Image (spheres, rainbow, N blue to C red):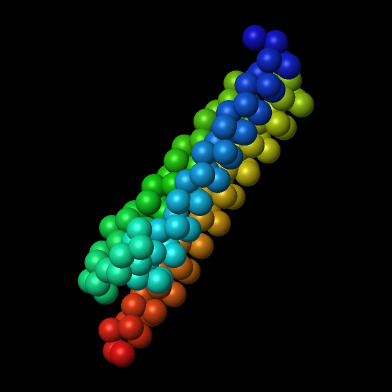
Length: 127
């Protein structure tokens, strides 16, 4: 495969990963909103159910998304080691760094939201 073909393939995988991540994180925000408001599809739910959704849906899905981003980063890094052209290697390393940075940021954001939502649920329990 020519170097331009490799670059185009790397960018296609990168854009595909970015679009999937955007859609997935949009779903995660909807899940977060339902935990925060206490309404799922227009119906009120119990604090117990909201707490279960926090740990079994939000937390696990957040870490799963980070894992997928790390796998994507590892693939880009491996691709950077397999190409001979320096410019192509830079594109692959850029894609790898972006995916790895997104995974790290996602872990921080998920943990921050879990702490916030847990404190909010505790406050609602006390009321």
